[in-house]
Amino acid sequence: MKRKRFTEEQIIGVLKEAEAGVKTADLARRHGISEATIYNWKAKYGGMEVSEAKRLRSLEDENAKLKRLLADMMLDNAALKDLLSKNW
Image (cartoon, rainbow, N blue to C red; front, side, top):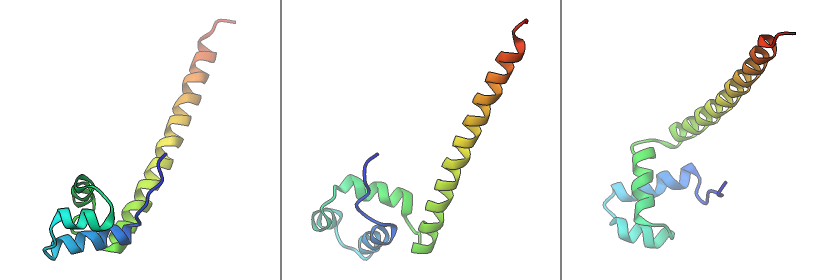
C-alpha cells in the first residue's frame, strides 16, 4: 500500500487555495503534485472542513474493518456448511 504524503488538513488547505482563485497548474507545481491529484481531491474533499474530513477517514476505516469481519464470517459459514453437508 502506498504511503500518503498529505494529511487531510494539508489537502483541505490546498483546496481552499484553489477556491481562492489560484490556478490549478500553479498549485500543482508549488505542492509537487499533479493537476489530476487536485481534481481527485476536489471530488473527494470538496467543500469539507478538516473535522468532516477526519470523520470521513474514521468512517472509512470502520467500514473496512466491518467488511473484513463480514468476509471472515462468510468464510467460516461456508466452511461449516461444507463440513455439515458431507455424509459420514
